[in-house]
Amino acid sequence: MGITDDAVEVRAQGWRTLTALHGMIETALERALQREHDLSVVEFTVLDALNRQHGFHLRVHQLARATALSASATTRLINRLEGRELICRFLCEDDRRGIYTELTHDGRQLLELARPTHDDTLRAALGTASATPELTPLIEALYAVVTPS
Image (cartoon, rainbow, N blue to C red; front, top):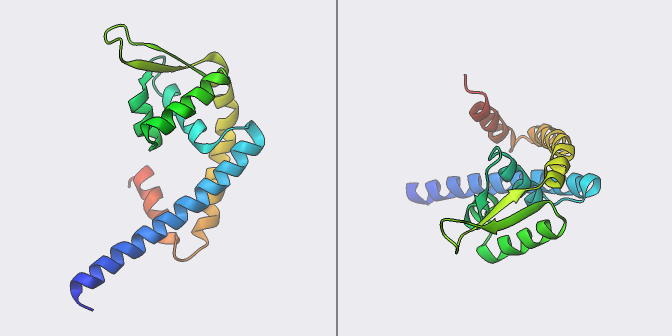
């Protein structure tokens, strides 16, 4: 195996480690949010992304980017959330082809109820993951990004 092969293997191992951590966290969040608030992780992500706009709205393609979903999957997700009256959508006045999404009062309330569950579950999942030696360096790197020295 040459140096190039070693570099590829190192990157592949890093990617597998990151994927394992993501899977552990997403599974924990999915279970907790579904159990406590009847929300999926991606639904929580949409509500959170809209809430971070501080009274503004997002176009559908911006939500697709925030959730890492395809356009069609994002549309189905928006339909579900709109059906639950957690978000609303309306046409852009400047560009009638553009559709905006906005958090409703009910959506904001549900997000406020779900945020502690999300945050506590994330904290616990990171704590559990840090006990796995292969994941410890990645957890430390995450905390270093969040709290730079």
